[in-house]
Length: 94
Image (cartoon, rainbow, N blue to C red; front, side, top):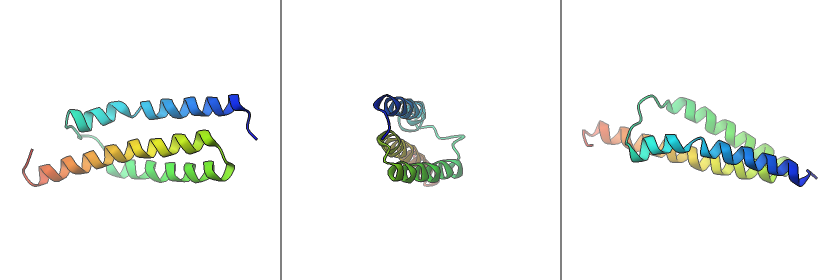
């Protein structure tokens, strides 16, 4: 069993990793900008997070599980926003 203080470090790291994506979400959803966002890069990051989530489940690390679930949600929020904007631009709508 992992010591609580070690899990706390993991939870803090996970929280910071999630907060780091907030500016990207604002760019896509608030400012309606998506230039420079690579969907292939985001896809690879998503696969990596899923693998980290599986690893966290296997070793029963609450910090890894929570951090990866919430980071996946944040990244999917960005991906959905980018796809939405690019679809609207393809239709000529803004």
